[in-house]
Image (cartoon, rainbow, N blue to C red; front, side, top):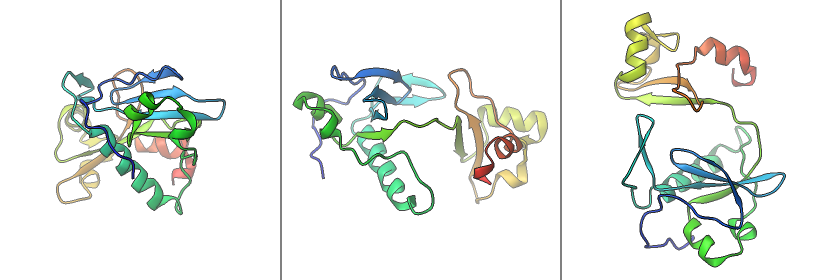
Length: 179
């Protein structure tokens, strides 16, 4: 297991040996080569699509380790973007490697599916607006949305602008392999 740095929380990465191609709300993405990307989970905190000024120590490391755990557990079900390339094989500078410890992964370049699943303990925000307007969330009747005792799940578009709800029929017809 990698030794984690006890330095200040990481709000933004500074990897000079690679070109940063995207900075999201939580993750920074770097171009490695024609086939690989470096994805780094920072300690930035995002709520309601706003990045808050105070990062959470070790958040990026926890997110990365949880992701790696589930990718390993589900690899027999579906392939994923993990490449098997180690961060140490891509980043030679010791100071750059130190800021990435436990929070980065080298992945295959793939086309992202621009959909995310939102799990809610209650309806608020866009989900509540959708429910009030249509009696459903993302085209799913409310009784079907709440499959667990107190949690609801709904798909949303992952686009740079505000995320509109995505009708489940659109997901099914545009991505038949999800059915």
